[in-house]
Length: 216
Image (cartoon, rainbow, N blue to C red):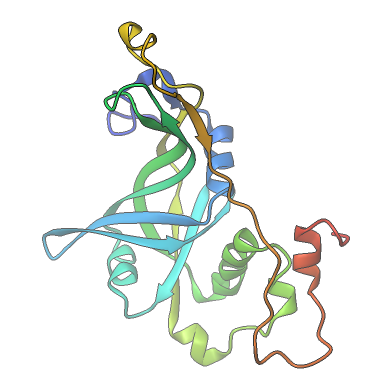
């Protein structure tokens, strides 16, 4: 991984993180990335699922989509991943903020070869829900033809993480205003079966493991 002028954190640099292990941890604990690129001379940002393997991010999409058509050309892109952890409520409107963790990186996409497509799709599936890939029908030839996978190296990257209490102006600490942190949790809840699910089909291994009831 390399640092550059593009990835150097300038605003609140004390919150900057450049260690690859921490960057990968943030990537691995989120589901959606936002991909920014230029299309027909205009900026575009598209949210999409992803998966990480080693130092690469994999994303997939319809072969005819504008996202895939641009990325397979190798255009310059910027990818952002963010999770909001808490509302930080200060005594003044000016000092309200969020506790969060975010990653931004720059690079170019490369089209994954047909011979590697299934393996790359499994990377994305495992990122969303590990073991689910082994439980479902594999993509057929029509579905594979309609889908392309793009690989992007996590090279020029940085993270920014904010935690802790609000930082009020000294003169505001005497105000009779409640201040503190309002945490936000993002947990899985009880699964809801499809209305058309066949009878006598129990929860799959992937969900059992997710809730700590199965063996990996």
